[in-house]
Image (tube, rainbow, N blue to C red):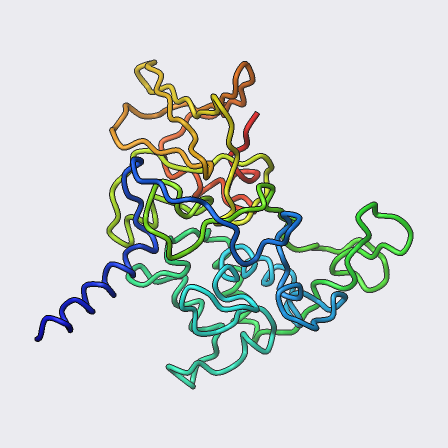
Length: 315
């Protein structure tokens, strides 16, 4: 192997690892606005991102709401209308899901996706941030021969005034399942994937699960603080002087983790479990009442909530 080839392979390896690795706090890369966030800070839907798309068309065309919700929560960051992160296929519409897999034409994209969600060696999403209930939703739909459904029609006006039609309803009646709760990137800025690894990377994602899968450094606790309950992955979170996460371990000792410019907080050293947690901003405090043993905070406090109401929120 010549010297040029060796350098190329090393570069590719480093680029791959950078997708999940969080380096030391000392070298922080600047957070930048990325794709998927509009100029007013709201998250773009797939129709917003595709020039000429009909704004009244269903976001997840042909899919039942519960299936669309799973995909929107765990898959479409990369497998959306615009493919990112090296994703090879879209997971947005019914036709996307029932298409044959390129790797195994005897299986549909939906079946291959389910297998990856259940895989322990090559999980999808890569950080493993998907609940068993969500996996069961997709599995049940596939077992039922993937029937079509309708999840969204015309979006309601912002004030809910005359002419508003609930998502999932074609006659104005309340839907049985209105799909995922709308999200917004309050900061209007996102982590730019591919930038150098730092403590500012991948806000919102399950840090410890990702690092475990990809070989990044180990944390005792890690997560992201946001100003609202439902904010998308990679959106930069809450900031402010004095904003911090305070934990009280099983021995009654307090530990403070500052919240950085991306809203992230990290602890490396161990503590006696279980612990209690609170987010502090000046004299304001938001406290989690239930003692915890899992330090991967974004695993539960995900975009739509995975056993939690939603994101870790600033007071």
